[in-house]
Length: 272
Length: 241
Picture 1 (cartoon, rainbow over the protein chains, first blue to last red):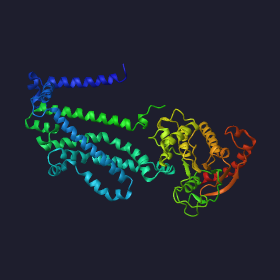
Picture 2: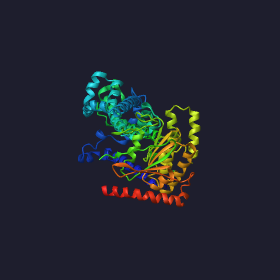
Picture 3: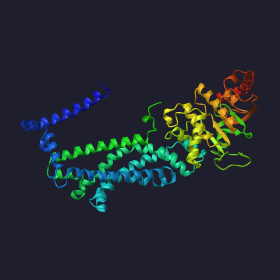
Picture 4: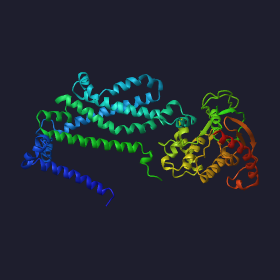
């Protein structure tokens, strides 16, 4: 038995017990007495695993106008675009300000001011400007991701070891070559540290946009809001579980990309 | 108190000079001034009669600190200077291959620095500097952080490489034995603020064997005489603390 096996067993056990309790406590025969203790332990509020499973297949079938996987695709599309735009603009801005003391001093207070605004407060404004569709969702994701990546890259670009820069100069590097061979790779390690939280935050931005966006915006966020409208807990649970699974899948993807691009880091090296 | 008071010395073409003194005497500051990293508050540095502005292109610098780029493999680290100078890929590859062989790093070409020992990393740093064939090689306690065995091996490799190519070398160290083993002349600096205390010609024949040379009488005589002078400065540096 591998040393990880007990860990996996415990994980599977916790999941099974949770599902069994959930299914058991919401059984029609006992739910009346249980809900007297805690009113929300009732299929009306939290649905049941079996009902959620049934709705999952129903929502993916031809019986609904927009199937679940299409909603998911729409959410993924906005997330991916918002994430990509946020990461690239945040990275470039972080590099520029990180290597330009004067510009960083001038713009510092504005960046802090914009960043300290709760992003959700901007949702109505973004909706006014960009409407209910893809653009608004992308902008919301971008607004969050940009700052996370920006601050990390900024720190990374400022903390480049000056002796590495000197070494490059002694070897004949021009300003551009120093940027490309020293500053960018050394800042990238910091940038990557921000990507895992960024991808979750991009998803948050998109789902908030979909709450507001309504049917024309589509997406998993729309399914959640629509389920609230019809008081359909099972559909809401389907949406939440799909979102959680999406978040995990994206985080794993980022980890793998990181392990590839940062394979020089000691934590990815097996010592010779 | 300034690091350096008044330091005047000349280094001849293709000469191996060691700059020795207690820590804090400004050896590294002098080296950094020659390298163009810091400007002297008074006085001047001349290279072939010119006063260079900034980092002179004919100078190579090996730091004590590990400055190998961790995100590049051994061979891509050594190739850096050639890459910066726009040397074509085929020639780059050939010169890197030679450099790797010269210091016995074969088999580690594709390894990342995180997997290498300190001695191997310092060999990469040395070859990365030598592969662009600088006329003047500045070395700031390059073997200071290594264990004795590794240090001796690297000294031997440095001597062999220097005999083959004959750069002008200015080598900073606080290890008198290292200075005698390597250098043609030793410049002893006083404790902070540094002045030139003594310039000493090392009269040991070349090629030198870094281990056997220590067993010779001539070496013992060089060491004894210099140790007396340097010992005074070490004692003063200790009092100053």
